[in-house]
Amino acid sequence: MLSALVYAISETVTARAWSTPVYSYSANYISDLGNPQCALYDGRTVCSPLHALMNWGFVAQGLLLACAVLLVGRVVRGRTRAVVLGIGAATTAGFVLTGATHSSPDAVAQGTLWLHYAGATMAILGGNVLAIVLSRQRRQLRIPRAVGVAGVVLGAAGIVAALTWLATFGVVPPGIPERTAVYAFVLWQLLVGGFLLHVTQPFRALLSRPSRADS
Image (tube, rainbow, N blue to C red; front, side):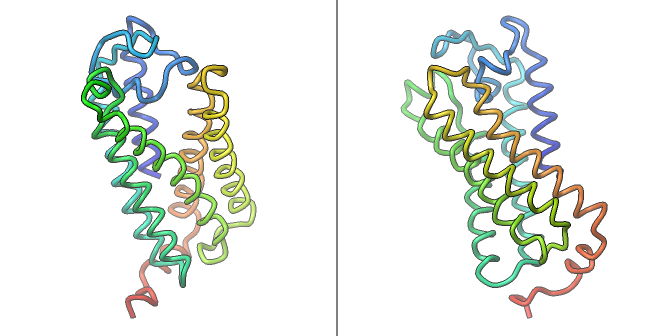
């Protein structure tokens, strides 16, 4: 849950800092918030005064997600545990890479733009796949069926939005499908994270026990 809150706060504060031009949630990419250069970039005027906040927000989101995955990994069992840890590691690496490398004119000139794109792809797809996988383990996590179903729906919606973004590139304002894909995962984090921490007392008891892999 903290991972999602860090992202939401970083994005909101960074976007509000834009003045010339005003940041557009539909026309601008999320990555524009982390662009360290004020310039005309890919047909958009980009100038993000608090770009460092957004980039550190990406990194913090990934590291906090890693902590959450390690905790949940103590609860799920069998092959699912390995799958969850693997997807979690890839998603974490994606967020960190997204924050450490930028989408900017310098990145294009230096040939490092692909690193940012790779990180964003890992973070978006990995996060939504993780939502689906963990939501299907609702019995092990002891969450209600409705919460599990919501997680699967959100994860699937995020993946569909990401694919739609690629399929409609240049036709639909890019911020719309991109944000749908990202917000689906963030909303799932808030939903499941908040529920596990504040509603499901048995989950805390499960964490206090050694996992089967540790015994």
